[in-house]
Each structure stands twice: as structure tokens, then as C-alpha cells.
Length: 297
Ligand SMILES: NC(=O)c1ccc[n+]([C@@H]2O[C@H](COP(=O)([O-])OP(=O)(O)OC[C@H]3O[C@@H](n4cnc5c(N)ncnc54)[C@H](O)[C@@H]3O)[C@@H](O)[C@H]2O)c1
Image 1 (cartoon, rainbow, N blue to C red):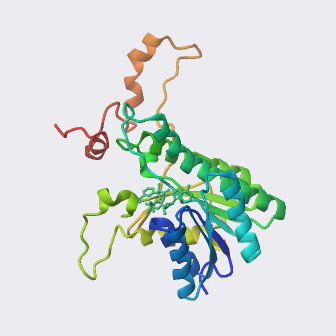
Image 2: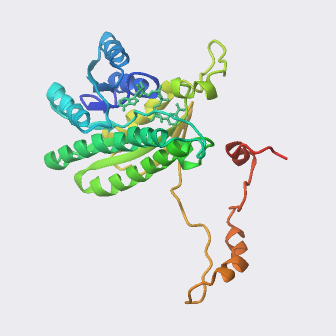
Image 3: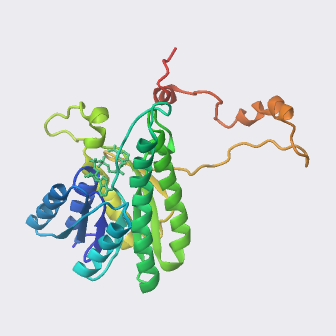
């Protein structure tokens, strides 16, 4: 049997892309899977694919950022399979626009699906685990757009950075109940990123680095009993690569001898903060220039 034998795993937004791969891999690893989707047809197709391959899955149609759907999602796992072992918060949308052009609705839609869509299922699952004491696993889905920033994605990046913080804090609060919570920052060619990765051609027989299914093995591991000692971490994952992110960390300091700074004193000494830290006050390298969309010159 696989690494998730007999476990019950819930995946939100599992009808396509990365979530589909996570649901299928969880089933391949022996889990019984609840496939949540707003798009009923896409969710049904994944359930059918899992069952056709000999696995066990049920569908749940609903918006995971709405209270009643988050509640019925976790209830579906308990009613269909009698237990809950892992929740994978994956559902997400984009409404890319620069800050100046972004409408309040575009801001709200992205913040809601990602942040509320992570909070609500986690809230319901954690209440269950607190009550039963059975322990559990949560995997959240952050993004380099939040961890590093990305042009045109202030709403999405703010939500994704928030998700990294959410995972860290949930890990702290739920440690006493045997629940781990980690986040991934994946990169893959999906409907969401077809513009960014879609044109990369893979020759027959070559490893497809941007295949969304490449994200699932890390998620299956984080959902397993073997990952019980890992919590509050943020992993990068794409292709054949798994990374570990360092959280926001203070790398330099100036102090003022026990007295409040005057703004002018900070102006005179701010350069000391950059010295020897590797941090630069401006756009520091080629990768950062790409994110700022500034020319190399
Ligand atoms: N593809 C990447 O390179 C990339 C990079 C960083 C982060 N991510 C994140 O990975 C996750 C999956 O993205 P993807 O690339 O597979 O996108 P995708 O668009 O292919 O799949 C997302 C799925 O979520 C569903 N969904 C959207 N809102 C929902 C809701 N409120 N409730 C339930 N289901 C909902 C959609 O119908 C869709 O099937 C997202 O959180 C995304 O932000 C993706």
C-alpha cells in the first residue's frame, strides 16, 4: 500500500490543474479522497478517473470560501468515509491587474477565494480534530507571487503571502492537537498559468518540468504519518525540485544607544542596514528586474 493507506484526504479545487494531480496521487497512495470543486463537471471527471483506476473518491460541489460549503465539505468526508486525516487547501483564482487599474471587486474576489477559502475549511477541520484528538495534516497553497512578489498581482500576492502566515500560525495553534500545517509554493503549467508556461515544448520522452502532477508527491508526503514532525514550513515545489523557504528574517540592525531615533539620524545611518546583509535598497539583480519589469539597462 502507499504512503496514505486508509487515510481520508480532502482537496479543494481538485477538478483541474494542481489540485487534480493532488487528488489523484492521494488516491494512488491509498487514500479515500473528497474532490471539492465549484465546477461540478470538472470535479466529477476527477472522481470518475480515481474510481476507474481502482481508488475511492466522492465529489463535493461548492465554493470552499462560503461557510455552508466549507462545513458540508468536511461533513462529506466524515459521512462518506468516517474520518478525516488531511485537508489540502488548493482552490484559487486570478484577477491580475496593476494596483492603479485594479477594481475593488477584483481585489475582493481574489482575497475571498484564497484567504477565506483557506480559513473556512481549516477552521471546520481543526474544530473536528480538536474534538476528536485524532490529529491531522493541512497543506496550504501559497505562491512565489506572495513570497517574492510579482508584477500585476497585488491582490493575489497579498493573499498568497497571507496564506504563508496563516499556515505558520495554524501550525503553532494546532501543534497541541497533533495537527501539522505547512504551505507549498508550486509552479506548474495549468489553466491559471498557461500564458507563463504554456509555450514550453517538451520533447517526447523528456521530463515535463512544468507538469502540474509534479507537485503532488510532496503534498502526499506532507499529508502522511511520516511528515508528523514537519509543521509551519513553506516549501517551493516544481518539476523535479523541492525547496524550503526561509521565513521573513531580520538580517541587519541599527540601534541608537537607548534613545529614540530622529528621522534625520535614520537618514544618515540607513546605509548601515545594507552593509554586509546582501540586501539592496533597489532592484538588486536580473531576477528582481524581471519581477519589476524594468529593463536590464
Ligand atoms: N500553476 C501555478 O504555477 C501556481 C503557482 C503558484 C500557486 N498556484 C496555486 O495553486 C492552486 C491551484 O492552481 P492551478 O494552477 O491548478 O489553477 P487551476 O485554475 O488549473 O485550478 C484551480 C481549480 O480551483 C477551482 N476553484 C476556484 N475557486 C474555487 C472555490 N472558491 N471553491 C472550489 N474550487 C474552486 C477552479 O474551478 C479550478 O478547477 C491555486 O491556489 C493557485 O493559486 C499555482
